[in-house]
Length: 455
Image (tube, rainbow, N blue to C red; front, side, top):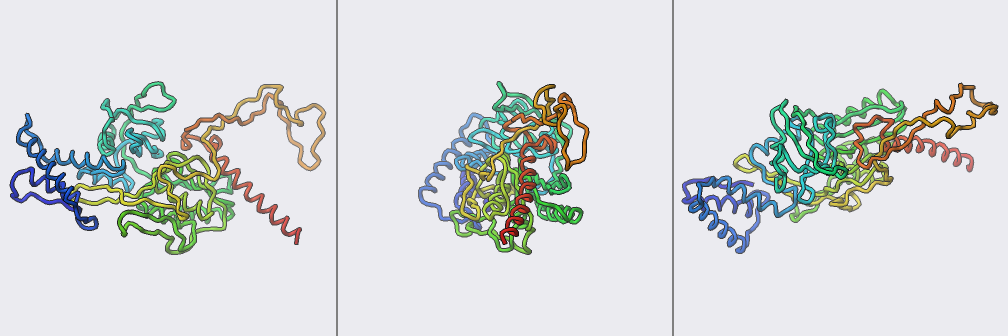
């Protein structure tokens, strides 16, 4: 989409009205005939602008007035449609490349409230304890009421090593709490991998950037090369705020057969009705897979989880996801600014829209912290602790611990515990995923033995 430049066309009001008209009428792929009613409204806008320019008590900046008018117009639409100044547009381009200066949180509007979608792992905000769902009510003492996401991001970014204070309200807080966080260069590694208990592969995707699919393929290849007997895989999408749509399709293709539908979009215009299928080679299969999700899993994360769920490729475990099911097209404007415009909604292969509802897990497991507690002496004693107990004749003898020395796990529920801050042993959702994969193997063995016996 383009805008007209001023070329001695008369008063500022006429030129600025033409700028706004260009946004309504559209250019390039967004051309549309404007109705007579639309032009009448633009005439009204031009009249008001002319009066402000000529009669307001102080001299005004016409450019700022037009930008304000554009923002006001877009605010009548959904919270993901926004005008970006030249600086904001450049920042958006930097974000997708995975390195920028700031705090390390992804934010959006929930209702009219500036809300944290997810903190990005290993960033200042994550280390400070910012959580998904936190409501940001102030930035450096300035209220965020009616503040756009773009302006909030601009205020939170700055020179590395300088502080910014965000005032946060959380359900368990009695009153808003200040978090003073030191800005830093945010370098995001989108793929983290390791092997748990020597038998289960673990991949965590922090967000979907330009090279996420390549990093994922490298991690999977290295993991299986070093551990060819892996029994299954956990794909952790918790607190992943999303990112690039094409990366969501490519990541899904790492686990689905060639030609499988990953997601499709539907919009008002025919060119927004698109099917995205797995291309290239067939993805990895032959092993069970669990995908972890939570309220901070949004957008591209939901595309991946929905596709793997619809095709029965993975079991989805956790809690309902964020529920962002719309597609934004970023349109560069002629003056270096940009327009992020919602142009379609996306649907899972089976036609499910996740807008507002999210992906519902196959197995609901709320966040919780597993803590090890001492068992009081004399309580919960087992057979081996009884004096004169009979030995086990198939297991080698072992030293029996006294009841007072025993330690047993106890669950301490925390509805929104941050999974990243927990060890494997403390992470309840991760432990349930591990249990599921290990049980899966046992079930397959037992099923095979039963079938052989029946034959």
